[in-house]
Image 1 (cartoon, rainbow, N blue to C red):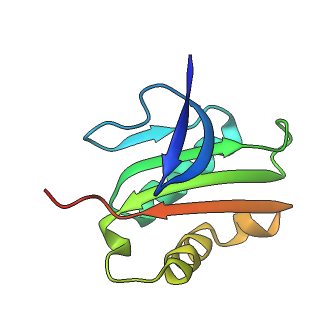
Image 2 (spheres, rainbow, N blue to C red; image 1 turned 90 degrees about the vertical axis):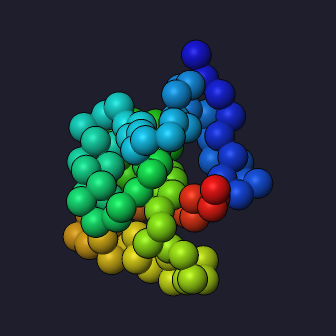
Length: 107
């Protein structure tokens, strides 16, 4: 079953239930999604990572959501640059990339 995921009030897309848990939750299904999710996991102390192939399965376009303390104090453009830098050469083989970032709420 799917649910609509919002990142800071913006629609991220349809992802299976269970994306938002208190511990790190990685949501990825295809090999390309898993590879990108693993790269992001290695580069960010993320509490949430979601990667979705939105190209119909060919791996040409991805939608990515990362929630991490690493983004605290940085503007959105800086956060997105960090994600692009972390993905490095993976980005070069993509047709497009939609990035959504968030900072965990303070308790």
